[in-house]
Length: 519
Image (tube, rainbow, N blue to C red; front, side, top):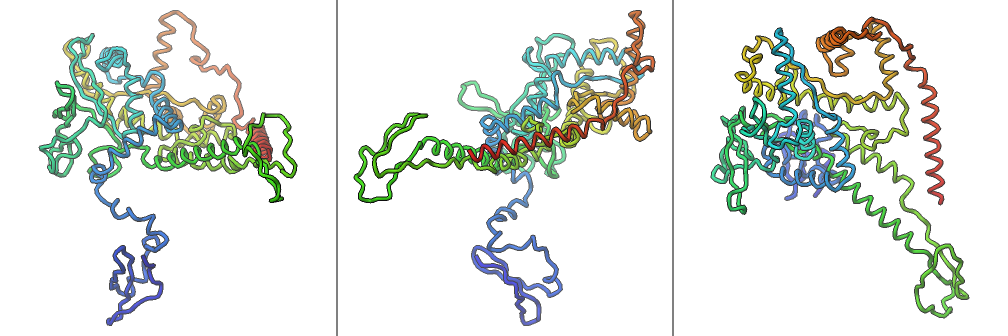
C-alpha cells in the first residue's frame, strides 16, 4: 500500500484531491480546500499505521453484531486464562472476595412497622442461607460464583424455580445457569427480536420477554432449548453500549497482555535454563590441534577438570532473565489489572514498595470499583438491584404464611451493609476522620457513607445496642456515654518514618538486583 501524499492535488475546479490508501489501490476523493485543511491526524491511514487500524472500521458496528461473532471465542479464552494463568485466577478470586466478603451483605429493612422489619430480616436471613436447590450452597457462595462469572463471562444467569421439598414458608429457589446455556432456537434464526438466546418484546430491544435456555435431553446426547419468561430469569450484566443484549467478559482487554506475558515468561525461563544447562565449552585457537573425541562429556558440579593441551574452557554468561525483567513484568501486569481498576499492589498482594500514603492512594480506585459493583448488585434508593428483587419475591410469597408480613407498610426501604476492605492503617484512618469531624470539614453522614453505612442505619444500630445492654442489665461502654478512652493519634506522625523505611527497602532491592545481575 502507498502512503497518503502530503502535497495537495487540485482538480479542474480548484478543489483539493486527497489520496486515500486502500488494499485495491488508491482512491481519490474530491474535497473542498477549506475542508481538506481541517482534519484529524489520528484519522489518517498510512503505510506505518494501517496494520494497527485494520479492524477499526469493522469494530464500529452494533455491539450485538460483535457479540454474535466473537462472544464464544473471548469467553472461552477468558475461562481458559482464569484456569491456567495464576495472575488472572488471582484477579478473579480477589474480586469475588472483596465484593462479597466472608458471608455476603446483611439486610436491614426500614419502615414504620418494626414487627414487619424484624420478620422480613429474619426471613431473608433464613432463605439466604440456602437460596438454591443445594442445601449446602449458601447465598454468599452464590454471589461469589456470580461475581467470578463477570470477568470470565461478563454476565450471570439464574432461573427462578420452586422447590417443593424446601424448608420454611418460602419455596422459591434459584437454579444458576452458565451463560453458555443461553442459545437461540434454530427455527428463530434471523428473527430481529431474538439475539443469542434473549427474545425481546419489540425490535427496539427495549425489554426482554423470554430467555431460551438449553438443557440436556432425555437421551443424554442432544440438547433442548426451552423458553423461560423474563420474570422467572435473573440475567445481569453491565451495559457497555445502547441496546446491548448480552454481556462480554471483563477480561477481554486483558487477554492479549496476559498471553504475551505468559509466553514471554516461558521464553525467558527456557533461555535461562538453556544457558544454565550448558556448563562450559572447550575451544581452541589453533586449527592444527587434534580433534577431541568424544565431543561432549559430563562435568561434575563444583569440580575442576583438566582440558586437553591446546584447548581452552569457555563459560557462558548468565544473561537471562534480563535486568529489566521485573519492571517489564510489572508494567504488563498493570495492563492486565487496569480494566477492573485493580492496582499492581493488590494484584501482586505485595506492598513492600509502598508506604502508608501510596498504599492508601493506590487502593482508592479499587475500593470505588468494588463499591460500585456491590451497589449495582444489591440496589439503592435510586436503582433496583438483583438482591432487592429477590427480597420482594420472598416477601410476596411468605406474606400469607407469616402474619407480620401480611400488611406491607406503604414505605419500605432496604439497606444493605456490604463488607469493606480493611484500611491500610485503621488507627490513622480513624484519627483522620475524627479530625475532619472536629474541624467540620466533613459530616458523620459522609464518613459513614465511605464505609457503606447510612446515618439512619448507624443510629438505629446504636439504639439497638444500647437497648440490648440495658435489657441485660449491663453497664454501658464508654463510647455509648460519649467518653473517648483512646488517645488521639496524629495521622501524619509516622509518615516520614515510613517514607524512610520504604526508601531503604527500595535501595536494598536495587542493590540486590544489581548484585544478582553481576552474578
